[in-house]
Amino acid sequence: MITQLPPLVVMGVSGCGKSTVGALLGERLGVPFFDGDDFHPPANKAKMAGGTPLDDDDRAPWLAEIGAALATSVGGAGSRIIACSALKRRYRDVLRSFAPDVVFVHLSGEAATISGRLSGRAHEYMPSSLLASQLATLEPLGADEAHVVADILGDPASLVDGIIRQLGVLSPG
Image (tube, rainbow, N blue to C red; front, top):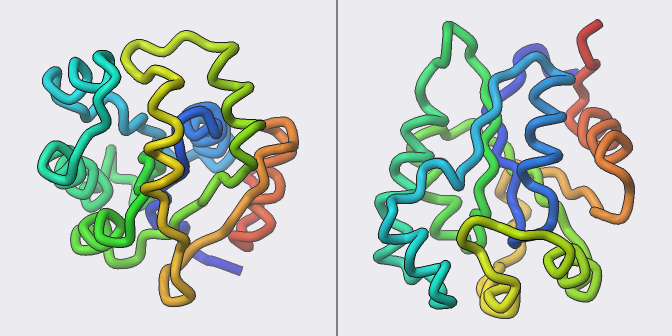
């Protein structure tokens, strides 16, 4: 049983449910939730909206902002949850450099499932055409990276139940 919830990054490719699951997880655990999309500068959003994947130089300041948010106590709370793709090991290393105890919650699913979800939604700047580049970029979590994995096939409430069980945390209330 974890006595204090560490900061969590709900990670995965676009369309896997990071924002939905992260917000619900935050609500269930009584922990502030932040969407990593809100940390992107306008230039990154414009680049993605134009169908061009971000490169490492584009992501560097974004990751630093997210890392700083992970390391900052929000409203006195020691824990927080941020949705962030965190696709590469080196991106997760940046986040860990700010919050060494961060745990990654990887929302994992088949490409066809995610593609189907993307085709049924409109996103401010993330076109479904970028899914292939995200899947190609995604590096598996290493055994030395604190993490849990949740298959996205279930409904969000069931996913959150499973994540909480994996984290060893009882939902408040």
